[in-house]
Image 1 (cartoon, rainbow, N blue to C red):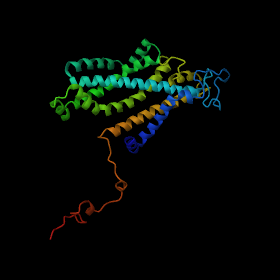
Image 2 (cartoon, rainbow, N blue to C red):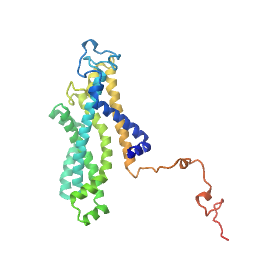
Image 3 (tube, helix red, strand yellow):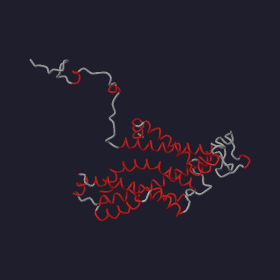
Image 4 (cartoon, rainbow, N blue to C red):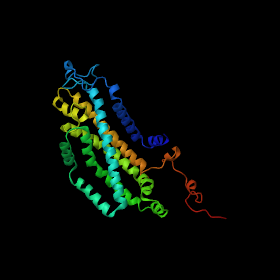
Length: 309
């Protein structure tokens, strides 16, 4: 808790983003209990109904409650984001650490595979894998993991190349520490900050990519609630029922903005090169000058060295 309070004091915008992300996570976890209606239930007499007491955000073209679908859509988007980011982080970090620490033939083989994946434009590779595997949440996670893993590999490999040359790693080798111990006790803890920061930034991109696949009809299959699917369904009724598209668009933008803001805050907070010293209230009053004697007692008020008797 002390680390969290310190982060909140040092990164005010990051703390606000963390609160918004917490709200999204709680909404996704409690969706079956807080949603006013079943997201798949169709109210035939209330098709394209405007916002009202019964339907706070209106209904869509099939009479489904937009608010309920938006809440359950958060569950789909966050599920894909968490699963994809976690799988990419573990796989990419493992490949990068092994490649960077052992080098030589292992490094060449692993990095050529990563280069082959990165050689294909991300959107093309993503669409190809999604079309081949078919529309489903699981296949969406697999496709996104394949595309994103090289990003974690690049960061982990670069940090491992630097860490393995540090003196504390050489000292660990000299004392007889084995490779697994060095990797677990020295390499992984020192690259964790960089990897976690990248993960928070990539999480926002994963949500956008999942929404784009759902918008194109190759993501989560209908009638699964998804922000991207809601955008796709609402485009045809943007003039008659704009709330269908505005609700998922606002939620998607807010979620992406929150994760990007949190990623920037984590980078500033965890990187010692970007940390700013904490000063007290008196030091913040920079406009109040100090007499030279207070800064250097050996100087007089004219800035000349005092002559000893």
